[in-house]
Length: 331
Image 1 (cartoon, helix red, strand yellow):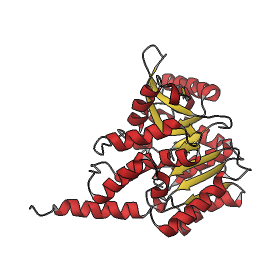
Image 2 (cartoon, helix red, strand yellow):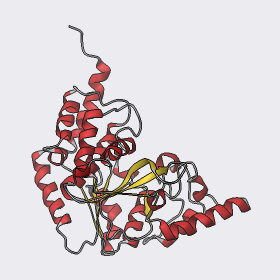
Image 3 (cartoon, one colour):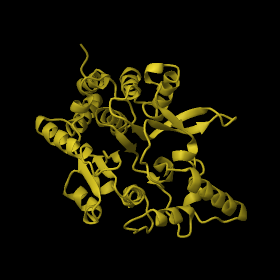
Image 4 (cartoon, one colour):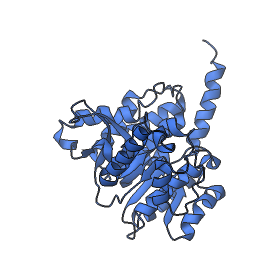
């Protein structure tokens, strides 16, 4: 019998610590109470939810701007942040400026076993916890976020948003929607979806299919495999299955009007007439067609918002506290 690999043991300790942040009997009662209060608030026109698994001190200006845009565009909306780190005095301090202005925002530590109970995700979590499933090289926190958003929406419904989404208009009236990231050359059919915005009623069967796909095909070594690629795979199959095809795919202009290759142009002041014209046209298109702008933090976190740039104008028009400064994702 071979001795265990000490590196795996170390990784497992980190994994267990991460999972235990979202487990426990005492946690379950508190989470269910807060979640029920949140979804049961008749004053909420739209119920938004985000996840945050990084330390609270990394919830920076970029993320605060995302929250500002939520309430600027949806002043009667409510926002729940599923996060053990933001459910803290430091997190409260970050959210207090919104609470002081009367906006409804709360950070709550999610009970992941409760959210996954009765779904295929329950078995996946047990396998990860016991070491029977390889978590892979990609951050488990990222994949927990991918799963958590699906499980929360299945249990409660609402609008899931990544923390690098800038909302541009009200989401009131949107139901059972996923956004396309790319279209085919004919601009007719989508080729990839994204899970940075998910809008679903609770118990929607497609969400259950997403969770089943996550548990069945989980690959922790390929970025995006359990997120954007996953919703693309399942939605493609769902299009021909009547029992769970009652959803709408919105064109890239709805949530992803600027792709990750071009997002830098929005943070910088145009240097040429061609760049200036491109930005002007894009902004006009967004004004007519877009509900939000995904900032692609994986690529844009290093960019600062230059005064006079398209991002500066957008954020200035969609902020509440409006301390724009050099709003990078980590400052």
